[in-house]
Amino acid sequence: MAKLYHVPLSPFCRKVRLSLAEKKIECELIEERYWEKDPDFLRRNPAGKVPVLKLDALTMAESSAICEYIEEKYPDPVLMPKSPEARYEVRRLVSWFDDKFHSEVTSKLLYERVNKKVMGLGFPDSTNVKAGAKAIKYHLDYMTWLLDRRRWLAGDAMTLADFAAAAHFSALDYISDVDWTRSETVKDWYAKIKSRPAFRGILADQVPGFPPPAHYADLDF
Image 1 (cartoon, rainbow, N blue to C red):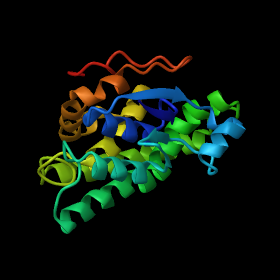
Image 2 (tube, helix red, strand yellow):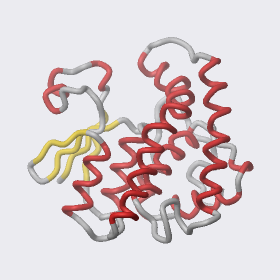
Image 3 (spheres, one colour):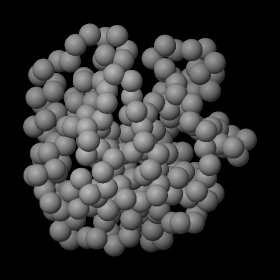
Image 4 (cartoon, rainbow, N blue to C red):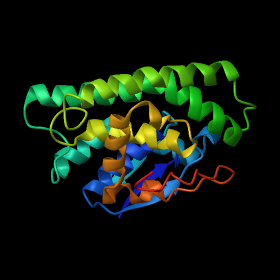
């Protein structure tokens, strides 16, 4: 069985979990306190980051590289389109969420509210929290613009771009940091994607000291 060294609320780990679950690849989840720099974990990934996936006798790091490996090795169901142009758009949006959205929103909200406490790094920085709360509005508006023109974020079929976005939004929704009233379009997209069987494990997550809101696992909000 595959093994995934992860942190439950990490959007990068969640993206990998969603890819594995969508393709029905069974995986043992192992929580890793990567910030403690355990020597055994650093041997698995000298970068000292999660996720790390052990699959097919390989030990792999970096979420996007892992997801593309999974896609190439286990192509059914498809999460990357066939044409180079469509694949570019998926990769562009995965990068958007894992880079820009993460920098402007996830790191300002999730990391300040949760990670600092878990890692013993003190209290949230209110300036960062306010900046993240402001920035997420822009991203919701951009997603609305995309979804008004497409069935899914990158086109007419669900792709890895949707899983990348949903990984971030699900982690933020766990701490009630998404204003779903801002966009019915994005809310409908999220309701559709979190209703997939692949999302069940994500919705069952429980982080000690941080209980999720009542709507978190509700498929109808």
